[in-house]
Image 1 (spheres, rainbow, N blue to C red):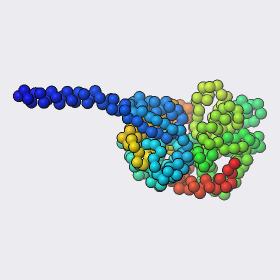
Image 2: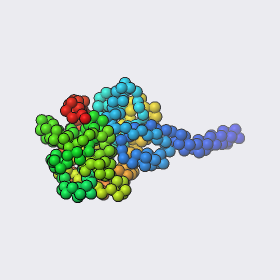
Image 3: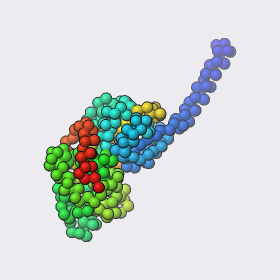
Image 4: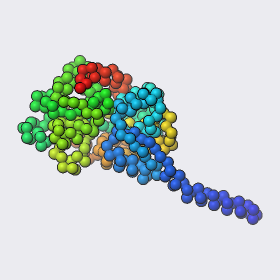
Length: 333
């Protein structure tokens, strides 16, 4: 080989070595803006950053707020990724043209009923609604543990039920819509009127009712899933999955239309849907995973999934505005 050719080869190898050394730094320089409605968000996104080198800037916002803000901004993206919340809002956002189409390679492991057929959103976990019950207050008042929705309408729970606002919280909307679906619209609205009589006010976020129940400010908080951190803090709470129907829905992840950091956004979607990602998610926030090769967390192994209320999520999303308007007219406090 001629000396000139050798020199060129050495120059190429040197440049390649410099690029490989710099690659981790390039990854570390990436940033991602995320709007999230998910427990243990800090731990989850710190783990993602640790695994990928991508820094996450996170804003906590309920799904109803996200949808309202996006519509008010006429589609201007509020962030790169939307992580968790009510699937009804994601469906509405897709219909409004507010989401980016992205079918992750990991989505093949997700059952079809947990993802959008066109790739605009994919479920990362299943949210299941339960009663977070303060055992201490129950014992003081001599009230038996409520095991059904019907039990919550009793006079002993007057002013003792905490629920978030269906016009803001995805959790609350699906509680409302699930009960309407299970009982039929007319009977469902009549039932909700009885439940509303025991709710002194509606919280803004789905995370507030379990906290109010834990602190004894309510006996029952209608909540998405279990809250091991509250038990770890010593609060006398237990969880009850209602025997007369468990509301549930997939909590999706999606990319906002015109996201500025598209490659990093896709990396977060891929990570959240990967087996490793879903194992980590369930370790921090015990929910049913959406992957068919990841087992449910220990905390949910005894939940009777046959009590899941049958749901048409597309219909729930399409009817959201109409149902919320009717709720506001009847029950807004």
